[in-house]
Image (cartoon, rainbow, N blue to C red; front, top):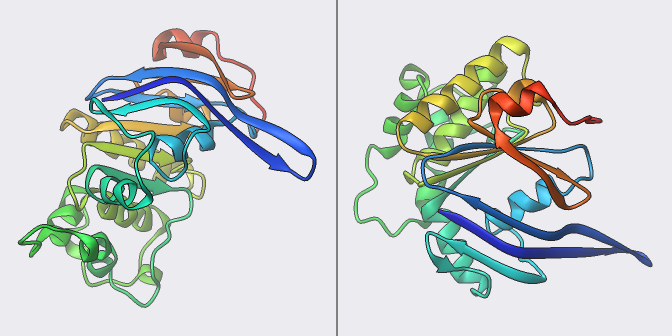
Length: 234
């Protein structure tokens, strides 16, 4: 599904040049559950932004389902994001005066689908919140709010789900529930990529890719990765 070839992304901060991605090459097959681990400033969030077409690389090539998306226009990237990629963030980004189902249905405003009736409630049912459709965010727990955010990411039925520190604002019990939900979605066919600095989060994935200073420094099955974890600083 995903193939990056020698991808580089550099930012300028005043006179300082920051190499957020420094020659990253990475392949992720359809149906994988991958955790990308790294300390703060390692480049993992920049990597997610590139994978999700929220940012573009300075050089290198990005193939998404065999299509070179490196040189697409902003409108073309937006269309792919809306139809093929679901995003989950640490902050839930829910509209407080909008019900759960209305929050979930927001991406459908930009959809070209001829019939979107019922998709919001269907997505809520997938995350176990069918009975909370008309509740507002302030009537939901943190774990339930993140489930609504996940349902919103799923409403277009994308093949790729990208999550950036999805349990960062949750307690341990809610975190476990969210990670099990990702596992269930993965078993259902979704390709899941989770960005994290937390080894406990990474344990739920099948594969761990480690990034430091914008470079891939490790890529292994989860069982091997957790035996010899890289040293991380939150």
